[in-house]
Length: 390
Image (cartoon, rainbow, N blue to C red; front, side, top):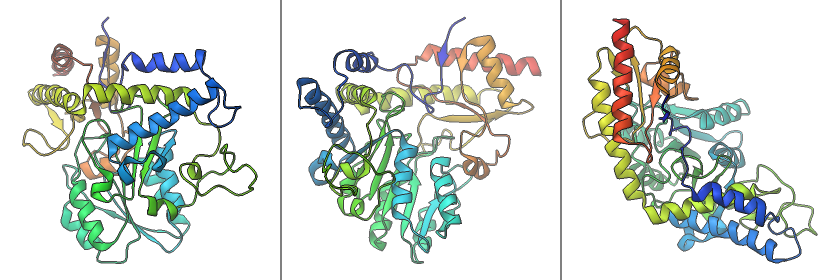
């Protein structure tokens, strides 16, 4: 049986060969801790890998102070990043505004903070998954301390107007935190130009890095206003018993996942060479082909925007009349070797917005290493399964 991977919204696969090679090379040739050794050649190599990964991330996302690497915090994933920001900034009595298309990586921290006295307002998005700009403008007429929102839905691929949201927040003097888990490496974004307070990213999706990597691109002033989530050893100012306030050490206590960071650095270098424009163009082409094919299937109900030019990424969730999405996913895997993602995708609010809660939907998300032939085979396979049920 052949194997087709269409779950790139969860994690991209395969990775560029440079990525696992970098992880292997670090484990077998370097291996030293960063800033926790005797300044040997291996120690310095580890430091260089970490610094270079920061610098590449700052360059990609338009980091502050001319992409200064010290304003990049490296984390284990975007959930970790969002928790650092939300828990480090929001205090009882503060008001946070978010949207109804958020992943649980935003929703769950906010709900826990809500129990501690933070006011949380969720702005309703449209049935296609988009936030009307008027909604944000009206919400910020009340005193607001923070806006946090996703750049793109992991359920239906809807891309939110971050530039417009950033402008609205800037006019009101409200910090904007952006979850770019789905857009990092696909859509250009300049944190400093837009005035974003904190951009939270993950390494294992559009950046093509290993699982267990992520980060935050900080506005320096906003970083000063956030308390660290975890404190401990940093390899710096070891004579002090309190957490350093200097960046990037402030938010990076404990030994980092250096093999994964080496892989992330290699992935970011590959991304620079390949170009996000080229990657996005290919994925968009595959997405359009998949969309057209899905819409040709009888009983197909595709979530979100389809075929009208509305900004979106190639993340397609759907249901077929009379079919359970979990059963369809299992049949695609068992009978055709196609990997997908059924259910709620860790985004129950989004599914409520789209009208698919609690059953969820089946999601297909092609990536850069898929082919047109694989897309056609997938559409044909779904069509065959549907026709058997008729």
